[in-house]
Image (cartoon, rainbow, N blue to C red; front, side):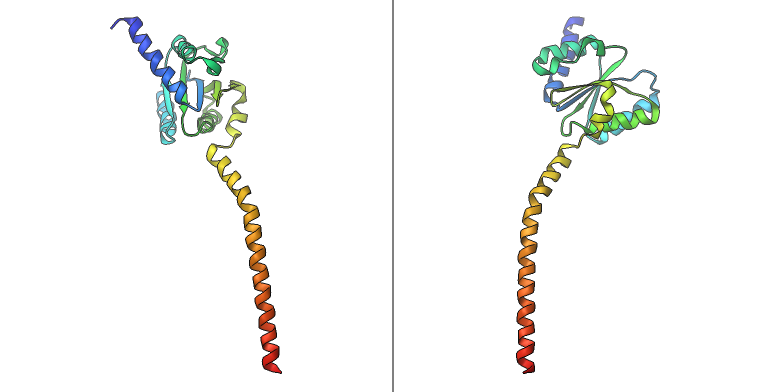
Length: 177
């Protein structure tokens, strides 16, 4: 297999991951020690998040191959040593792990992120990490849908309780008389 064919295999694999992911993060991992890198990868793996290191040109070609909205990462974001983090189930979970690690060690550095085809630059990590996860959004929506129903059930129960109380008082009066 020639070098060009090997590169194309890497590009195809990255393009497939990009197209499947809800969130794609381009990070710079310069100055991370081996222990820090291993710890970072373990945190990602615990949340079922994939982390791949590749050359910037191959990453850019993979984005170009996917095409569409997902090619909007500007060329100036491809610098230094880069890795891609793929969030499949929860697009925001990687941002929380990246921010937690950055707050503690000041690395890795977020260069860019695509969440649901929306571009975020590296300085927006706090805003991205503050976004609610899909599960949190679903819970909030279900909670707000459930609130009126709970209110109706509570009102019906209160009416029944009051009715039972009135009947009980009437029975006590009749027994006393």
